[in-house]
Image (cartoon, rainbow, N blue to C red):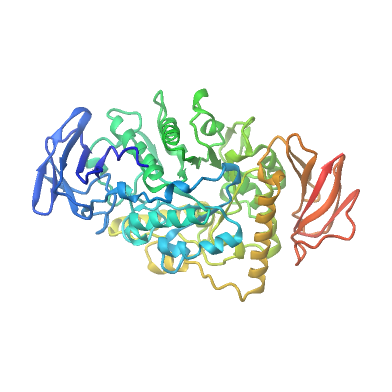
Length: 608
């Protein structure tokens, strides 16, 4: 059931009448242009211009004329001719189908996330291409996909973080209709949909927002230039714009969760932070519709305020990515200490992250040359998302190498086991489950030659900071994009089939065992064996004697480790070293754990 329509842009009411509302506080005149018609809008309070008409129909192209300048709608739902072309009218009210309300979102702690990029996930590079592989994800055991940003960007090749129309779905992916269809297909198959959104900056090409009002401020600067204006003069219209965007994805497209990109780059020192406002509005929507929605933050600050309740002046996010777990895990496996990896000590930091989520919790960071972070005491495990690779961590490498190009299959299994055994929400990146070696490179398709050259030089400078050698792939070249497409023909390769089988077993174990499924940080205990490069992880459940004992050997030697005091092993559940992962040992060890090099074993156990 639709409760309302968007409060910005061009929308249709239940009678099919077009309702127009545009924020242009400095404009002297504003008109809507469609076909051969120019319709003047009326100025109302707080810088908004409005009008109604029954002459505009869904599918019609239109422009706004602001003081004589022809511009696309900043809240456009569709840009069929690209970011510099006219906007297309879409009727969101008719996006609801009778089956939509049958879907019930998964509890957050049960999410098993698969991050993907629409353009490179399939040969088609569309939402339909994703839909065609949903059965593969179901076989794997995934119950949530995370789409990298789909907001309209220049050209047809982009990671999505250069989007300039936050409300418009990229046409080359399938547009708004394609996204809505994909969400319905996912829900029909029991898969939740997370959408990556960018509220900290706009892309450099096709950003017409400054033509309409003070969307940006010189008060703060970010890595992308002037900050989005969330707390400076004239910011109310900007705040409403992004709040409406978040609510639209939930209400009109039935997206289940939003992943908010780089929230540390959102500058807002007002009494009510924009994230708090988005959280509050999301709660109101959920109360009205009965549909549960989640907000997930990406932040490079180990600051639990982002995931703390708004009632105690937290920013109200439900969960966040933890890059520090990734960094510690990769260094433990053998990642060279370059760039941000230089700040991590391997297995000591991994053991700390298993328990504390964050690594830096008020401790001194050599890389930052300052004390950094804060403990996340009292925050449940479902508020943290762990991974061994993602789009950033792969794309931050000059050649875009995935784990399968850097580590052997035993190491890949070991990293996967660390992610899925941790008391956090696990996430994997597309193709990881069979060890895809296709790179995931950075690619764009800008139209401005000067901008293209700036992007090329910027990437070279970034890799210089990581001490990378060799020739940087050209981000503008179509070949760079094509190299990043996944090759799905892996069934004939024994090692990839073996890895896929292990991921399936690992995910099945995670889903079927409450001790792993419930993300109970309080019942998680870690034993570090530094000299052996091993960790023994107890994953229990508060109030229960049951646990899963997870044993990690990151060394290249066979190791013998003591069974933790007070723990009895009952059954081996999974062994990454065995070709038959479910093969149980004839004898369960009572005092010492024998574990092969670079391997993982999980035991069903109990406290005595």
